[in-house]
Image 1 (cartoon, rainbow, N blue to C red):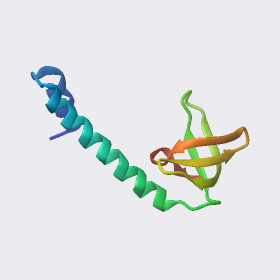
Image 2: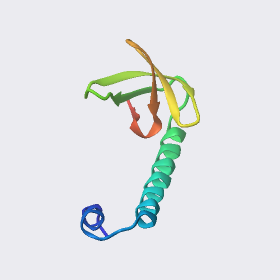
Image 3: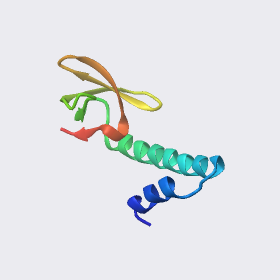
Length: 89
């Protein structure tokens, strides 16, 4: 099933709270898996880049790994960035 089909299903079907919670939990689980995988690709001192909320691309160096985020030092300061948002610079 494609993601478009899933979105259509969510909007058009008569899903109850339990169904929506199961979908939400599955998405959250997958996001955690992707984040953990991405964290394993980088180490402290690696150059990375990420896109901020306003669409600005930042480049920096990994300072520290937190439980859910990576602390990245950039020219404008330190940022807590979800690991899934990081790319190699």
